[in-house]
Length: 144
Ligand SMILES: Nc1ncnc2c1ncn2[C@@H]1O[C@H](COP(=O)(O)OP(=O)(O)OP(=O)(O)O)[C@@H](O)[C@H]1O
Ligand SMILES: [Mg+2]
Image 1 (cartoon, rainbow, N blue to C red):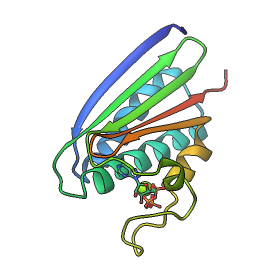
Image 2 (image 1 turned 135 degrees about the horizontal axis):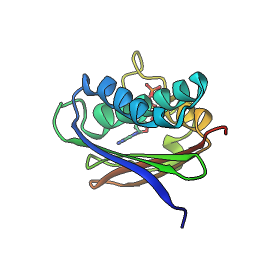
Image 3 (image 1 turned 180 degrees about the horizontal axis):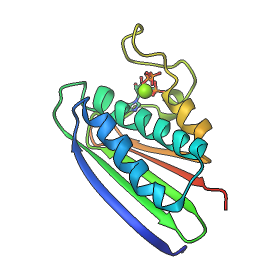
Image 4 (image 1 turned 60 degrees about the horizontal axis):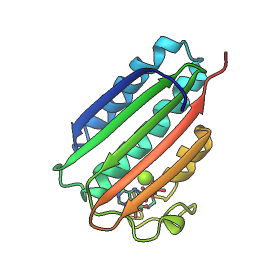
């Protein structure tokens, strides 16, 4: 097990205005490691996508339910961000991760969220159970 240097846990109501709260809180926490502007931008984008998914899909945009955010900073400058919810869950995770797959409104959603998370972070893993919820775990190693 790698040593955790610092940790933050956050619980936000699944309201759309909390998307920017999540993004700002995570970037403020990660900023102590002096990431590059680009790295910080990548992390902010990935957090936005994951939190938006929880708000829009997991809880159907009801504005109810909680989004759980856990950020860990490791000694080797790796960071992990886990965004989870207790919403509807995903029936077929592999399919959901495919580019352009969306169950959302075709005008607003284009099915690119998971792809964004995957490309802007080093790794992405998704665990989900229908009726129980979803957890998205992302990792990124910051440059020295
Ligand atoms: N937290 C979640 N709970 C339930 N379903 C989810 C969750 N996250 C993603 N999904 C499902 O996976 C699909 C793909 O997600 P993805 O973020 O890639 O695209 P999108 O949200 O539909 O569109 P975009 O992110 O481009 O606006 C969603 O349409 C939804 O069906
Ligand atoms: Mg999305």
